[in-house]
Length: 324
Image 1 (cartoon, rainbow, N blue to C red):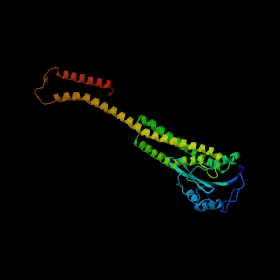
Image 2 (cartoon, rainbow, N blue to C red):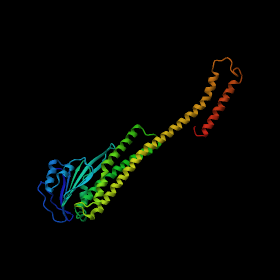
Image 3 (spheres, rainbow, N blue to C red):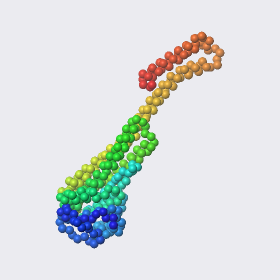
Image 4 (cartoon, one colour):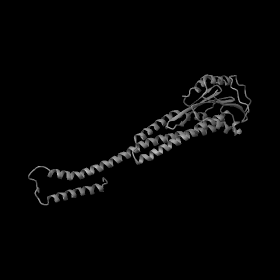
């Protein structure tokens, strides 16, 4: 079985013996006791054992085995079923998504992970060192799991923020190359998908804060409010990243248009300057026998004087208005 851990806790302290998942109905536990089961990518047969042992609803089990669910919260009798999505950034700027489904019922909490590379082992050890908190029951563990998932978004956003800053700085100096532009649009597509996949987490956490749900103590809502705040900050940062990436394209286009405008003005100025000697040379290059001052002894120097004077005047004028 893809069982990561299965332990029973009484007053926040873990029992030494591990739980056996054999499909037999679990007995009623005394107050301040609960089971915490952690599964990673279980098969249908393995989940059926857990379903029969803890009386889970078949529809909830079916959703837990489908790793493409959006974040949501459902109530099945006295059982609370929650789906959360994990996210991790790969080496190729791709965001890899996973899913963690959590069943919370009277005396138990069961987590089912798919695709997530962050195991709950460290989280479990951290919670077990805080017996007073663990004694609050499965709802506190649910808060810790959700907070652990949401905190996993921060390294992803930090990495994307660094990439966006590098692109922004380079776009100011030179227009981005095609590879950079493709990467930029790839990141924007990733962020749009991140919003679609992770966005419903905010609604789910808000319901945990305001709604009366089974197995959630009203006194524990303050913990879920903290998770909701983290989700909202994550979404705000994601929106900021989307705006930054869009601004990079707009800023780079404006700067490139400005550079092209400067080049166009410079070329137009030089074309106007060169038009003067071209016109004069063209006139005196015609094969007519009778042209004014054609046989004048100082004609060559006079023509050059006119060319230099007019071209110099143009150059000074264009220089003064910033075209050269």
